[in-house]
Length: 389
Image 1 (cartoon, one colour):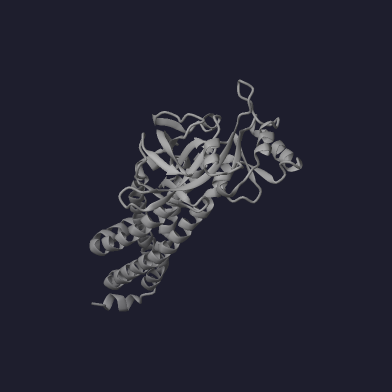
Image 2 (tube, rainbow, N blue to C red):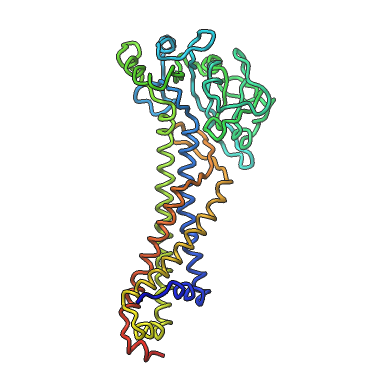
């Protein structure tokens, strides 16, 4: 005979205090586990949103980021004329030659110094990145020392409002607009005229060339052309989304690794707590278990009932943990991007696979924490159990 599920549910309700305490521990562990995965996914989503599937980025071979990439001006102009590059209505190449540098700004409140990415762009950059739109003010005028800043910089750093002047590169730059990158890394950047920024930092070379492909299928042809042309063979081309996904791996991996270590430590405590709770339940229900065995329920039925009780407890804790973690979607944080060593703002991102992973993790905790007590319950001697006080 099988022990009905209602028995398991009533058993948990009868021990409300110990059930609540164990449930709290399981919920907190599930919350930490889900939050870590959400944070890692938030980094990945922020970087992926930075790229466009129609764009390709050309940078120096082996360059780990835009910050360390260098492309000669003449060679950049040659790349813009390749037949795989789309053309604008006026016949100009749909491409942006860009430079990338890092400056320091002070954060609001803490007054701590933070690194900020400054991107010098060509006029075509705005159309190449349609996800970046003007939120306040106006776009900077090319040929001047005007800049626009991302929403995250505007919110988190001092002297980062329209009309303020920022000192970098040996001169002052006037903020004339705030741009919204729709959750991408561009929210954490400053944009200005590439030629003006290169002159200020005495940089004779570009960092990257960003192009719009005539069609996504022409990427391989462009890659082959760049590799075979002796003038450009020192560079490599990547799809923009692939490049930014690679940029997220170091930070995402660090967050996930550190978070999982903390989660494992917490989960051990939660499993020990669940195990103690289940052992106590067995000790307090010895006569009850003996009665079940005397009524004809087999050992495996008793084992299954106690194991299901532990799994049910962990599933409820996992569900509460995910529900609690879902509120983290409202939180936005900023930290250093290991690829560029500059500030990157991102949020927690909840996804169906994270929910499933958290619930599976909770079930594993329930099985590990409840198995040994369930085995002990199933092995109790009938007569000894019925005679117990």
